[in-house]
Image (cartoon, rainbow over all chains, first blue to last red):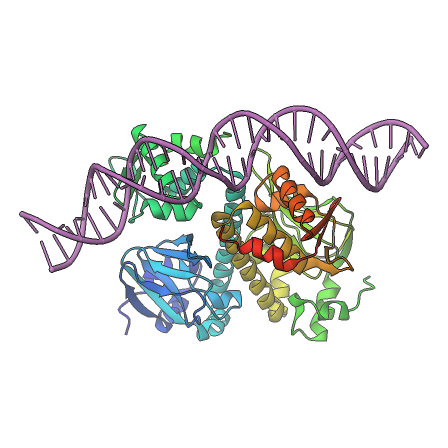
Length: 231
Length: 231
DNA sequence: TCACAACGTTGCGCTGTCGCAACCTGGAGA
DNA sequence: TCTCCAGGTTGCGACAGCGCAACGTTGTGA
C-alpha cells in the first residue's frame, strides 16, 4: 500500500550499499506513519513492537529520572533509525521518543528483525555500526559532562546542533527545529536560567542570534573558542 | 598451542548458547596474552588489530581530553569482551585500555571478525547485545551526570563497583582490585579532594571502610540512601 | 482582537564544589 | 631499619551555578 519509492531510501546511511531489490523488499515490509509535534513515538519500558526510520522531521530521545527530571539523551535527524531495541538484544525500549516537529516515519515490526538481518546483511552491518557510533558519541558526552563547565557544554551543544541540523540563512546557521532554552538545559545538565544568561550574553556580543524556540549561530569561531576555553 | 579448554569459555556471557564445537573453533583462533598491572592493552586511535576477551583480571577503559584530564569510561570485568572495534564498524580503538591488575587475555585478529561472525551467529548476537547494553549503561551515566550531585554519583560508583566486582569479607563487600581516590574522581567527574572528603565522612559514620587503594562497603543500605537522596 | 499561556530574561543571595596548600601515612625498596 | 613517595586527609577562601522570584514577550486559540 506504500506509494514510497526505493530511491527514497537509497541515499540514507542505514541503507548504504544495498541493492535496489533489497530496498524494495525492505520497503514492502514497512508501513509509514505520521506523528504530530509533541506526541510520543514510543515510551521507555514499553514492549518494542516496531523499529523505525525517520523519513522526515526531528525526534528527541528522552530519559526520566526517578524524581521527575528529564534529560535529552539524543536527537534523531531525518534519515536515521530509532527504536531498534532488537538490534541491542532487548525487547523493551530503553527511552522515550518524542516528535520535536511533525514527523513521517517508516515502521517495521520488531519480530521481522531477524528475517531482515538475515536477508540484508548490509543493513545489519550498517545498523550495528550506527549503534557503535552512538556508543562512542555517548561516551564522548560523558567525558564532556565530567570535565567541562556549563558554558563549554552549552556552546558545544549549539555547535553540534548547528552542524547536524543547521540551515544556512542570511543571518547565519539556523537550528532547523524549535528548540527552547529548557531543551538546551536538558541536553547539558543545567538550568533554564543559566542557559538563558549564557545565550543572552553571546547574543549581545553578536555570536549567536536568539529568538523564541530559535537559535541562529552567527560566529561559529567564537563559540568554538568558548567550547574549548581552558577556563 | 593453547592449553586452554573450551569449558573455560562455555560459562561466559559472550559465548552463551554456543556449541562445544563452536567454542573449540573460537579457541583455536585465539592467542592468549598476559598484561602486567598498569600496562596499556591498546590505545585510543591505534589501529584495531585485535579484539580481546578478559580471562582474568580487571581493565580500565580511559579517555583523555585535549587538555590532558582523563576520564574512566568503564571497567571491564573477568569474562567480558573489549576492543571489539570491528563490531562497531571502526578500525581504530575509540579509547585506551589499561590493566588495573595483572591480566590474562585471549586475543583474536580483527581481520577474522567477519569470518567468526559468519561461522558463529550466536557469538555475534551476544556481542551486539553487549554493545547495546553498554550504550544503555552509558546513557544512564549521562543522565546521572546531568542530574545528580557529586555525593550521589560517588555513592553510586561505589555501589556499582561493589556489586560488579565485590568480594565478601568479614568487614563487608570489598572492591576486589586496587582503586584510588583519584580513580573514583575520574569515574564521577570530580576531584580527589571531594572524593576523599566524602569517603572520610562515610568511613567515620561506619558506612564504608577506607584504606590505601581499597574500599569496603559496610552498609549498602545507607549508601543507597545517599545515592538516591533528593537533596 | 484580546487574553492567556508558554517561553524567555534578569537580579540576588546562597552553597556545593573546586583549587590550593600544607600536612599525614603506609608500604616498597635500598 | 631508614628513606622516599604515591596516595590520602583536611582547612580555608573563592566562585560558578543554582534556586527563587519577579517581570517581560511572543504567539496561539477563542
